[in-house]
Each structure stands twice: as structure tokens, then as C-alpha cells.
Image (cartoon, rainbow, N blue to C red; front, side):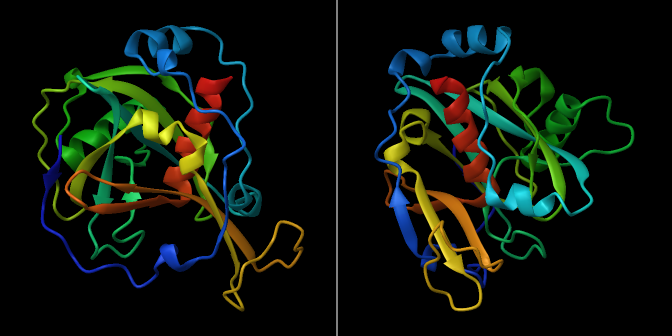
Length: 244
């Protein structure tokens, strides 16, 4: 389910240049039996007793007023297994230009719930109709450094859905195998000192230390996608949910 509204220039900030600290090779991958639609439905039907990770940008943003938002975490069932659908934002946007993200956005006053916000935003951004979405459940709120309190809504979507991108917001949609993303050996921790640009280890107490997870993905056609920041953090918490 790949679609494109045309590529724009790369954003001025290149997160791929941030030093790599480590890949998470010491953690297990999610068992393939758990990467099935029926297992996910049963998992979300139960009380979700698990501990999400608390990321550095979350701790930092606790000093920042938050705005409510939701994103759709869309899973597509293919013959090869479940895939996660992601978007690449228009490179001309003033905020998060060119970044990999989930469809979603701020809650409108008329929105009845976080799920409604996620469905409405997905329809506006990529043309995914609500009747093509089966919400499974929500993950804990993820607070971004920019002050958004984001509810990730995990859902199955119709594999036959014909998407219509809003080109002013979304340049492209693409799919990544869930098995790839649920293997921590593909989770890179990158960190740096914003004043020097040099690696900043966890022991560093300098307030200029920043860190994020990244999950680089190369598609079959050779296209490289650098999944990072809040999107990677929410994927990381999906891993924590499924491994628990």
C-alpha cells in the first residue's frame, strides 16, 4: 500500500548524522506467533499490564504545557505477515518537515474521543475511511518535546483500501514488516550533545544531552526510510506491549 504525492527536498536537520550509541542486541524479538492479527485482537481485549518506556524527551516536556493529539498506528495484514503503515510528511511543512510519522494530529474541540481524532486525521491526511479501520485499542499517552500529549491508537486496516494523500501534508505512505520493527536489533539509540555535536553517554548530566531511537528501513526498491524520534518511540512502546 505505497502511494506518493511527490517528493520534496530533504529537511535541513539530518538525524542520521547524530552519533549511534548502540543497537539493542540484548533484547529478544517478539515471537512470530504474537505478530498475528488474531493474537493482537486478544491482547488488546485484555487489561494491558505492562510498563512503557519513559524517554528523555518525555521527561523534558513535563515542563511544557501539552496539547491533546492522537495518531493511528495502522497495521495491514499481507500474505507475508503484518505490516505497519507509515507516512512521510511533506518537506515544505514548517513543523516536522519530511519526517516519518503516523497519520494523526491535534484533537478538535468537537472530537468525541482520542480514537475519533485518530480516525478523522487519518481520513484527512491519507483518505483512509473510518469504515476501513478496526481499532484494537490505545497505548499510553506519549508526550513529545514539542508539547503534544499523543494517544497512539492501534488498529487493523483494510488491505484493499485505496488511499488518497493530502499532498499539502503527506508526501508518501509506505509499509514496513512488523517483524522487522519488533526486533530490537533494529532499534538504534542515538545521542548527542547539542552544543558540540559529539556523542553524549547516558552518564552525562549536561542539560544539552539529547537522545532518540531510530529504526532505519530499506525497502525492496532500495528506498531508505529513517524512522526516528516520537514515531520510533511509539513503535518501541508497541514492542514493549507485545513482548510483555
